[in-house]
Image (tube, rainbow, N blue to C red; front, side, top):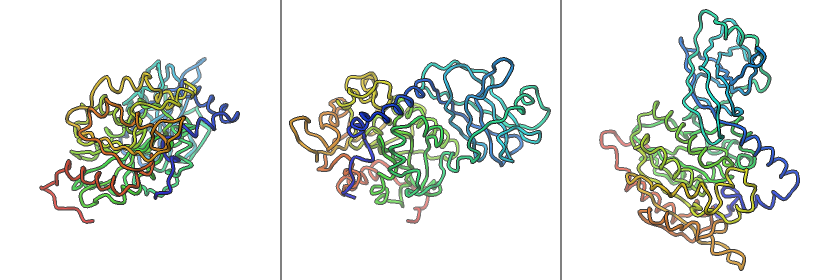
Length: 423
C-alpha cells in the first residue's frame, strides 16, 4: 500500500496543471456553469398500496399549457432520491413504471408534490420532498402527465438507496471514477448520486464507523484501515460522493443520507473518520447538524487542509471544491466561527513526510503542514497525532491504524446487553 500517491485525494495540485489544457478548461467551464445554475432536490417516494417496481421521479414546469420536464431520476423501487434540476420554480411528481417505458400508464400509480421554488443556490439541498404513489381516480394532473414521454436512460440505479451493500472493489469506487467525480461533479451526481454504503448487513450489536474520502478520492482509499478494523466490535460504512461539489453541498447530502439511515436502523452511536477535504465536510456537518445527530461521538481527521491550499487561489472561482480551499475564503472562515460540539471527541492526525523545496513550505507531499496544523483546529482537538507519512500514505500506516483503533475502542464502549458479534 505504500506505493499510493495523492491520486485518490486532494488532486488540486495536479489538477491545476491539467486545467491549462484547452479541452479541460472548456469542460470545466461547462460543468461550473451547470453547477451554479442547479439545485438538488431530495426526498422519499412511498406508495399505497405497496409498489414493488421501478419509479420515475420528475421535476417539471408548465409553459404554454404544456408540461416541460426539467429532470428525472429512475429508481429501482420506492425510496429516497436526489434530483439535480435548474434553479427556479418547478413542481415534483413521481409515477410507477413497471414496463420501463418512462411514461405514466393507466395501471401505474402517481403522486405529486405541491408547487415550490424559486431556488437561489446550488449548495442548498432542498429536503425532504416526500411523495406518495397511489392508484385511483385519475385527476387532471395525472391525465396530463400520461401524455409526457421522457427520453434517456431506462435502467434504474442498482445502489441508489442508503445502506446498499457493496464491496470495496466495486467499479464505482475506482480511481477513474474518483477523478471523474472531482472534474465533473454535476454529471456524476445526476448519474450516480451520493450515498452511504454498507459492506455487510446492518448488525445492531456493533458500532458503525463512517469513512469519508477526500477530493478525487473514493472509499477504496480506506481499504487498509477498514481491513484492520475490529469487526467483532465495529461495522464499516462508506460515504461516496462527487468530490468536486462544494463542502456545504456535500455536508447537506451527508445529513440527508444519515437521517434516512437512522429511520431504518436504530444505532445509538456513530464514529466518523475523514481524509483530506472530507474532514472539512465532516466539520461542516457537525457544526450545522449535530443537534439532529447527537449520536455522533468520535471524529478523527486524517491530513485535512484546515487552513486551505494556497494553489487554490489560481483556480477558477466558479468551481465549488476549489473555491472552498482558498485560504481566508468564506468557507474556511465559516467553519471556525463555531466550534465542534463538545459532545464530539475530535482527534487530528497529520502526516509530515513531504517534499521540501524553495517553492513550498514543509508538507505531507500535497498539503502544507501549516494548513494541516491550523491553530484553530489544533485548539479543538483532544489530541494531535503526527506520523512520518505522505498525504495518502497515512491511510496505510500501521502506526496510524494502531492509534485509530485504540481511539475507537476507547470511545465506543461494548454493548453489554447484546452478545458479541462473530468475526
